[in-house]
Image (cartoon, rainbow, N blue to C red):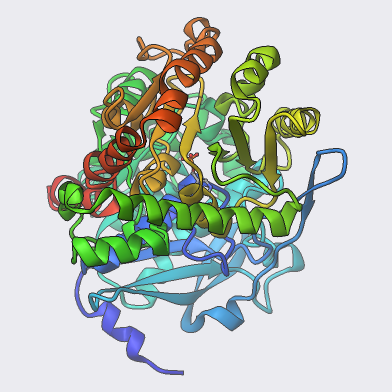
Length: 571
Ligand SMILES: *Cc1c(COP(=O)(O)O)cnc(C)c1O
């Protein structure tokens, strides 16, 4: 084995901790937007030559492969991967204490390499080691599987095991960036390390240098949805973790009633942020008393731009992939070239749809795309609220493409998938619609660039940021979305795309105005979007170009990482 990985340890780095990461479809250790964002973050970090190292779990069982059965229901199949084949084994191990046992943790190295010469190592932690009990060998197998106890064990391996392994390998870390609360147990390890001598050796609280830990930590919270914030009962935490800190001290940091991983991370981070301006506000209301900043998410430009637009941008705006500010000059590209590139991406998607579903879509018909995790707040079946109205509007004039997985335990989410598939069946011959199975990075890469508009209709303000709309923008696909997350910042009505419903008011789930969203969707489709698409091609291409020049130029992980660097890591 080559030892050249040691050069990663020669100068201080920022450690980016994340439970899931989507780097390539070969390594299916992500479930949705959070993981893809982590992957895009690391890729931009490599492009920008930032001194990062990422830490995650290997999830050998992967996140499931989805099949849609004849009834239109989601079926889940395993999608295992072997770190032995795709990564390099690192020659260090560490131990974490779980339920009183010493559990060995090892790491696999994957290198993210940029054409700029930048490189970021990614460590996949793994407990599948001889000497660990069978049960312990399975801890790092499944992403978001199992029960709460398993989740806590995984978070011990990620946070505590990750921090220890970085030290064992010789990394010098000057900032720890926790991507979501899943990683926040690392603060407990840093607290242990911070202990200094005090007069009264029994006064552990006084011996802990919380200030030094705070100075090392950055925390990004990603969701206003309650279930997204892990909380563990203290009796479970003590049983599984042991008494890492006196209970009173732990409670003062992680919450009185339960160990709340978000509260723990917020209490021990100098810089805390939400992932869009609105989400920053919503997080402040959820966690009063904390200073919470906002850095809006992005997407990795090269990863999410289809080959059709890559060659167009390379020709007219060379350097765009590392300097997206170039995209403001998109108007230098002739309209016909933009349209041709889009038609190429559309034909490519339709070919793929034909292969997978046997449905032949018509390239001349306005095609709406909707794909994301099927969590209920995202309202995946909203466009079917009034079928009569949809038919009146869209017969022969609209096509729909859907995709998305629901978490295996999310029965309501699975029901939405089923309903969407029922509607698709009933509309056959009137409005052609398809459900592409197994939404993942590869499917997203084909799907998003190939539709004409990108639909998103979450229950506001629950979409923290959303990123698929940014992928659309890089491919000249305008957004048609509820004003939530990043779209509040990217939307200029009729210029960059279109809004559904009113802007969000306040920080609570707004079910009242949400009821009127379907009507607004149909109205705007019929009176603004369809006429523009069918009767004013030049006007349509103008909006496509604005999606590129006014959205993609800014909503990307390069801009985002420059902000993390100056405001969070070096601030
Ligand atoms: C980008 C992406 C997401 C996130 O989509 P949102 O619209 O932000 O929810 C989820 N899954 C995959 C596979 C993606 O590529």
